[in-house]
Amino acid sequence: MAERDADDAAERPAGPERPAARGTVEAAADPEARAEAGAGPGADPGAGTGSGALPSAPGAGGRRPPALPGAVMSAAERAAGGARPGPLEGVNFFLVGFTGALGVLTAWLLVETLVRAQAVFVSFLVALFLAVGLNPVIEWLRRLGVPRWGAIVLVCAALVGFAAVFLWAIVPPLTQQVAEFIADLPEYFAEAQRNPVLADLDRRYRLLERAEGFVTSADFGRRVFGGVFGVGQAVLNTVVTGFTVLVLTLFFMASLPGITEVGYRLVPRSRRAAVRELADEILERVGAFIAGQLFIALIGGAVALAFLSVIGSGYALTLSLIVAVTALIPLVGTTIGALAATVVVGVGDLRLGVVTLAFFLVYQQIESYVIARASCSARCTWRRL
Image (cartoon, rainbow, N blue to C red; front, side, top):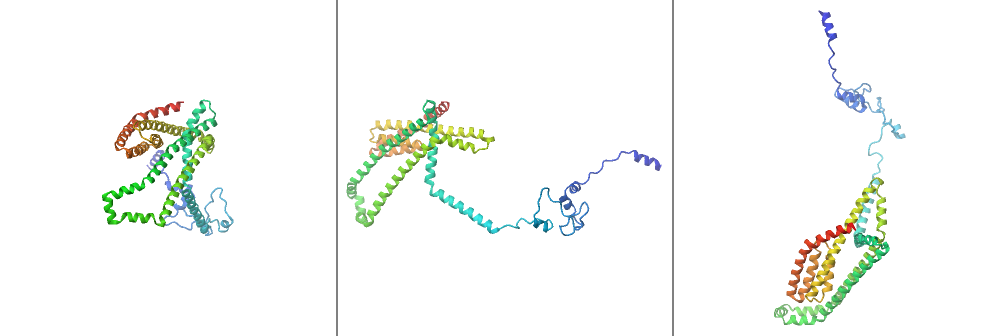
């Protein structure tokens, strides 16, 4: 009976072995895991041998954990038995603080420089934007057979001519109006004295006496001349800024291909082709947008000139140029120009001012739904050219 049971046990297939615990296998493969496995309750922390024992610290009689492959110990580490310093050992906190203070000071100086030189940076960006916008015109002239330097000269001559015509149309009427206002100022005071409301206020609060005292005071001349000099300084700054923008635009138009090529070389070779294609597309779209705005501004100025000439405005050319320049501003430019023309015309004749306002309201609708779509078609045609 016992022999039969022994034979059955020998013939019975052995059951699947229970897999060893995952932590045990990993502990056997990894010294650190072996150390964690031996750190349980009841483990002998001083036992340096055995599969589950925690290696003791170097110099305490136990085995030292193996060094990482390729790790090089310093003399101090070898003297300390292989113990590496902690994360804060050997850190010079004074040097860290000094470096941080220098970084903060550098950032503050950079921000201060940008704030002080914001006018220069604005001129720089405006010139770059104009150069990118006028580059399609230059390329179109080149495809017609004009050399690049000739196309740049033609475009710059057109810009200078437009600026000269604009100043010629703005400065004389403005000077004339200021002179007429100064000449008519005594008459305005006389009319104010004849006004019963103002005469009553003068009797109560002595307004004319106070005005006369203010005019004859010693500070009046300083304030007036200070204001005049301030206006002159603002005009001079505007002229200098315009000249700077013109020179920078000329420079960017002449060197735009070289600038873009240098920028492409800064991109890694593996991505250079994609970046070049994307940047060229961006420049082309920006140029087409500016060309469309110029197209809309040209039409707006021509329509304003025709309308103001028909109603007999004495400042038709000036107001039409203002409408054309403000039309370059997206979305609100036409509204600004229309309000300026309406105010100037309405001061002379209120009914003509109302007619002018109605005309520009109708024109804005035509511009939004007809001229803007024609501008988009012109951009597509421009890109094909």
